Image 1 (cartoon, rainbow, N blue to C red):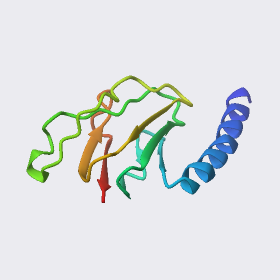
Image 2 (image 1 turned 90 degrees about the vertical axis):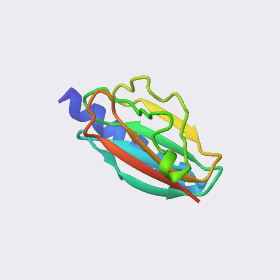
Image 3 (image 1 turned 30 degrees about the vertical axis):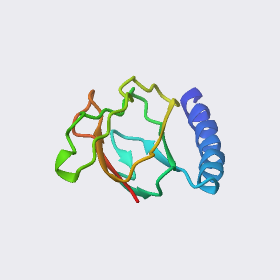
Length: 116
């Protein structure tokens, strides 16, 4: 019963956060059920992405410097700290390109951000 109450509060908070963030032009990616939702997004240069973990497990957002050289886009940021349940991690994208990321704890979790 306690978990259900916690997640109800989390979902209501999330609805508020998503509404506020989308109004600002930023995007929210849910980390839920061992998946980034959505996996693929497109944002404008200068916008931020906020990963919000609503899963019962801890996750992270990891990049490999130089991994995107074929696309001429190198994402060199430190987002690799673990994000526990109901944790948020954010990053503002100041360069155009296609950026790939994954969870180092669960490498099958992958995502892509296209910055225009």
